Image (cartoon, rainbow, N blue to C red; front, side, top):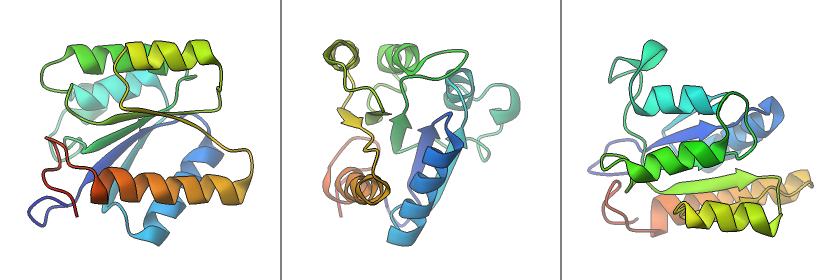
Length: 152
């Protein structure tokens, strides 16, 4: 939280099951007061640039954290990441790659594009929920950054 205001997490995830696990984990852990979910990279960019369905600021508040899948339809996560990190207004938002890919080449490309973290989704449900719980606490409670201010 920043000054008592809710921290918004933008989740760009095309797998409905993964999105639901993340939503439930965040709700159960009371990590985020608002989780915004988009299904593909184009929607993520529309949200961040307040275009189309996301043109009103109250519909698309600036996120304090972006969770970004790599493999998404329309525009992949790597291209979304590149655009975020090239934009002066968006570059400081912590952007965490959350993907099933453990390929070193994907990891290298993500870090070359200035991802703040790269996480591989565990196949095991309990491990996945545990990871998401930890991710939320680290990025939103302990980590200090320009968007969310001082931690905890």
